Every structure is written in C-alpha cells, then in structure tokens.
Length: 301
Image 1 (cartoon, rainbow, N blue to C red):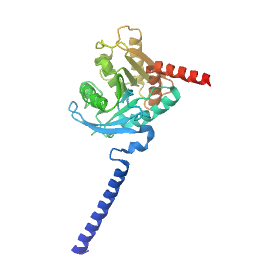
Image 2 (image 1 turned 90 degrees about the vertical axis):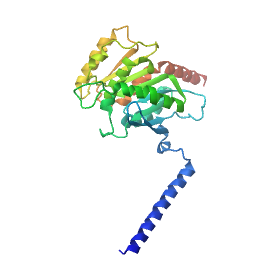
Image 3 (image 1 turned 45 degrees about the vertical axis):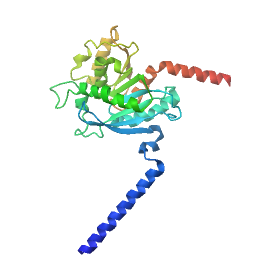
Image 4 (image 1 turned 135 degrees about the vertical axis):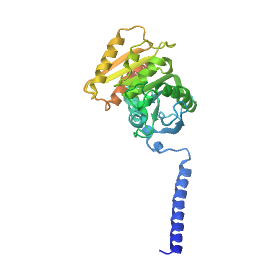
C-alpha cells in the first residue's frame, strides 16, 4: 500500500469512528445525559459514582439502588442498607429487596453497594480493609481506616445525594465482610442502627470480639449473625457458635443480638437467605403494620 492510500484509509477510519461517537452522543441526548445502564434494569435502577477515599488512599465504586416510586415521593425518606463486597453482593441483594418488599412487606430501602471494581487483588483490597493488624497475612490492618472512609466520606456523600432516614442505617457483610461488620459493632456501635454479619471469619484476632464493646448512646441497636451448617470453612461455624454462646447471656452488650443458623446453607450461596432473615428482624414493626393494613383492606371487601 502506497503512502497516499495509507493516509486515505486512516482518514476514512477516523471519520467512521467519529460518526459512531456522534451517533452514541445523539442517543445520549435523546435519553438524557444522566442515564446509566442500570436504568434499563428496573430492579437495580438508581445511580453510580466513583469515590476517591483520602482515608484509605484508594477509590471505590458506589452503586445505588433507589426504591420504586422514589421520584414520585419527594418528601419521603428511606432506610439505607450498605453492602460490603458490592462487586458480588449488590446485584444479588439490591434486586432481591424489591421482592422482599412485594412478598414480605419489608419497607422499601435505598441499597448501596461498595465495590472495588473487580476481584483481582491488585484492586480488591478486602483482605486489608476488613482486618486488624496480623503477621499471618501479607496485607492487613486497614479496618479502622476503612471505617473512617465509611463514616467521614461515604455516608455523608450518600446522605447528601439521596433522601435517607439516617436513624435507620444498616451494614451488611459476608465472610471477611462479616468480620468488618463485627469490628464496626464493637468499635463504633452508634453509626449503624442494624448490622448483619453473614458467616463471619473471626480470625485473625478473634479476642477483640470477646472484649468489652465501646459504649453506645442509642438503645435500639441490633446485631444479626448468621452461620451456615455446611460452611466449607467449618472453623468459621464453630467460632460463630462459641461467640454466640458467650454473648447470648450477657446483659451489657450495646446491641440486641439475633443469631440465625442456616440448616444446609453454605459459605457464600445463602446471602439472600441471610439478608431476608435480617430484614424480617429489623423491620418487624413495619411488617406487622403493613399486614394489619392489608388484612383490614381485605376485610372491607
């Protein structure tokens, strides 16, 4: 190919790419510049933003599922559920919340997934973020900085953007995330009204979860711990049972504890069941009120 032909081909390809970009931009203008692909998945419709953390020194990808009818109720505030490991748990649990609202009378909520953007350890630092200092791992000890990120950066950002009932914040974590939920409960009890720890990995440094927790100002806090009988990490199961036995008879805990044993459940696959049990515990009053209203309406007909 001679030089003139090569230049001509390059020019044609450039014009084609420009035309494609212009077409995509025209499509964006037609639907509005603020859309995201999740807008076309109604069960996950909401928002996304990237948040750079100065406390942790790394970015997080934040996904937000808004309740159905959110735009039509401009004065209404909603509970909020923050999901650790949002890369995997947000698509499952945020969408499932819609069905829990339909079938179980669980109140609609804003669901927030805290994601790393992938599972590659180069960008996914859950081992460091969800642990206290240990010599057993190459990366550890980031729990307090991660909690500062939650308290000082993420929660204020989310709660400035959306209509949230700040008295009803919930934190959900699975496995290492379950460790982080317990860390939060023991060290910063008032920040979240409800906490859900699914199949928590209590190692390393399990002794901290037998020590005296920090004092709480609130008297309505709840901590829900779920453990599956077929967890592939059976040590997790035994440690969770020991922890439950230790705290079940105590009267000085800053939270009321609910312990859920999932018969036949496994380490990761039962997250919707863990979530459903916890939502039923946290929102018992609202569920009963909705059922009374529904029963009354049915009786009138």
